[in-house]
Amino acid sequence: MKFIDLFAGIGGFRYGLEKTKNYKCVWSNEWDKFANQIYTKHFGECDSRDIRTVDTKDIPDHDLLCAGFPCQSFSIAGKRLGFEDTRGTMFFEIARIIRDKRPRYFLLENVKGLLSHDEGKTFQTILGVLSDLGYEYQWQVLNSKNFGVPQNRERIFIVGHLRETSRPEIFPIGESYSVLNKKKHSEQEGGSRVSSTIDSRYGSLRNSGETYLQYIGGIKGKRDMWIKDDKQNSRNFSQGQRVYSTNGIASTLAGNAGGLGGKTGLYAIPVLTPDRQEKRQNGRRFKNDGEPAFTLTSQDRHGVYDGINIRRLTPLECERLQGFPDNWTEGISDTQRYKCLGNAVTTNVIAEIGKRLIFIKGGENI
Image 1 (cartoon, helix red, strand yellow):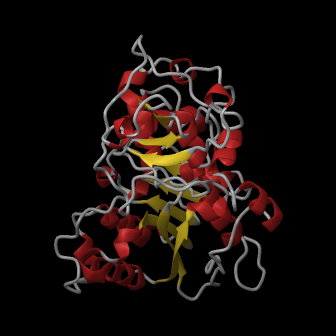
Image 2: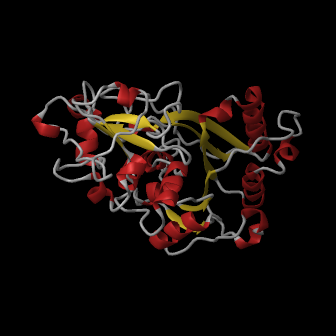
Image 3: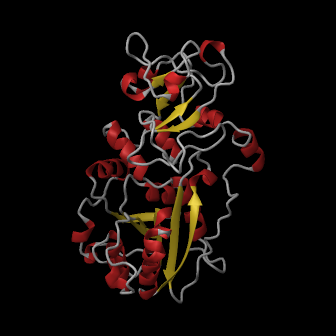
């Protein structure tokens, strides 16, 4: 199936779809220079123009339009002006291309908050525009934690098809869905320790003899880590006082199996923004042992707390939390890597939707 990749970022849609072996990207567009650099490195091409300046005649014909579009406020959304309601927003660009190119399908992704924006009027406007363009649609909020990555990331996915064509059976995807079978899920996640999952697959230190500085390649511990040990009062941590080793470099991280100094029972706990005590996500700053990490964002810092130290998640860990191969975002600054990964779509979710989309109602294989 031929598809185009709009607001392509670092290639989450493309990587997720193409690894199913049933999809071929014929055109992509991403204006952010850092994301475009990563995308081009892996796929060899990516139009860098502002999508608002692209004539639809320049876009190849395609079967599927994919877009994880930005959601700016709709200045007049909800006034029931249909297509006119979306002018001035990035969704208008999607609607413009759908109107002119008439793909058989589209796959859109956005934050869960789109459902409640402007008391639901924005979402209703979007659905109304898609209907006016001649498409039927289905949608569901999916959480990345149900697709094989330990990240609590809820996103809304909308799949549409041209009216009077076969409807793909995509949703619902059950909340219990997981790429892990029940036995494996019980062993690795439930009762689980996110620590064991993070340690073996998501990039926490595998050797307690490595230092934070060595592991992440030169970021100073003073900037990104707090330290607490048994000889220091716990209020040092709870009040956010920073405690450093004598040389100003973060102490050795505890390994999950034995811990610092041979201690046991130390687990990797997801923490939000280690250097900002007041920061919360859904009212929380820490997760419990066994819970998936917070939703990766482009603004927040994310870390893990192993009972001795708090450290920032590495770009490698963030790549794995989004389902990308290791070192996918190498080549740009860590600041930009975090931003790009926070804006990315979880590739595992896209791959599952892609597998379902390739078989339409009646069993026809596209």
